[in-house]
Structure formats: C-alpha cells, structure tokens
Image 1 (tube, one colour):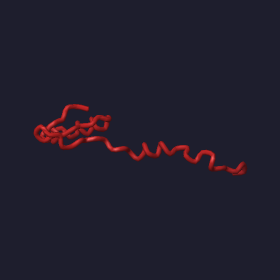
Image 2 (image 1 turned 90 degrees about the vertical axis):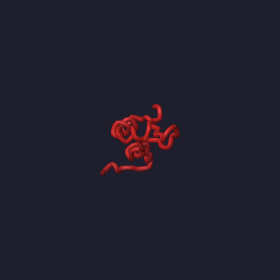
Image 3 (image 1 turned 120 degrees about the horizontal axis):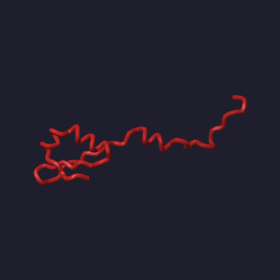
Image 4 (image 1 turned 45 degrees about the vertical axis):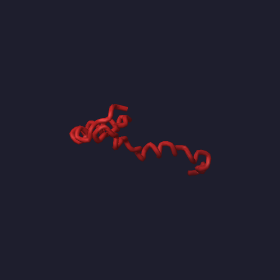
Length: 66
C-alpha cells in the first residue's frame, strides 16, 4: 500500500491510480490529512467461475453410445 494521496492529485492521475489498483495495490485518497476513500480493484466474474470448475465431477454420466 502506498502513501495516501490528495484528492487533487488523484483527479489528475486517475488512470495511473486505476492501473495501480488493477495490479492489486490499494490506493488511499485523503482530504487534507484525513484519509477519506480507498481505491481497489473489483473481483472479475471469471475468477468466481474458475472456482466452480469441476464442482459437478462424478455427478454427470455420459452414455457409452453417445
């Protein structure tokens, strides 16, 4: 996690901060000296599908004459 950045800096460097969040970093945004927001990447739907792969193993049978 990096040092908190000001809102004005976040406004001018949003693309860079989003890329940083996509890499897994948390970006804290501050107003004055007080942290007020956190920018983090959201979980992609593919990641949740990957965990379900093979969940029905052994429960589905394909006939030999298929």
